[in-house]
Image 1 (cartoon, helix red, strand yellow):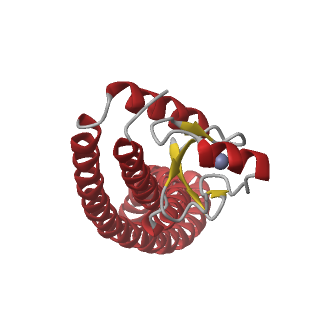
Image 2 (cartoon, protein in one colour):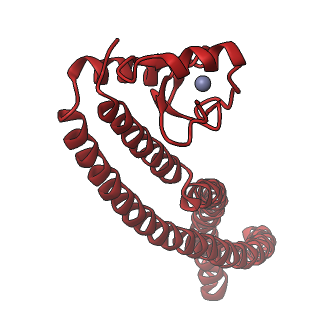
Length: 247
Ligand SMILES: [Zn+2]
């Protein structure tokens, strides 16, 4: 392919813009906020699991509380009824003995249930505190995450704006170059992953670092300035400048 030397040199500007763009994209993808956010998301997930476990324990304790209460209500009612009958002498001497025995038994059962009730009340209180603390911790993590997300978005936007500026510059530059040359550049850039042209500087391809051998150098030195050269190693368009070392 033939192209004006100035057009060939302009490819180096495009390559430079492409390198800058790639660096900005890399920076955007590896913002420190990403890693920190992932870490916090893990922490939040773990806390959520703990909240669920605590709520399950709390639910169990509350169910136990209800169960005890529903056992206590009839026991207390029966004891009260018995006590009233005993107090008013509504039962005969024979039935009185067994009624007193039953009432004593009921009192023992009620006491035991009330003891358990107190224990469960304490459990509910403790577990509620545990759950509330976990929810507060999760809230703190979420606050940190919101701050980080805002930081990340702001940094991302800033980088996007710079990338946009570079893209505009690049488009303006490419527009003024022969379409065929730009198309070749793009094809190589895609294959090489990054840039499609490199300077031949001090007898080296600055794209891949290969040093050209003598025969290659001789060939390039005598080639027409319009001829588009290619690096044998990486395939990039090799652009000659005053620093190329060709004599
Ligand atoms: Zn090369």
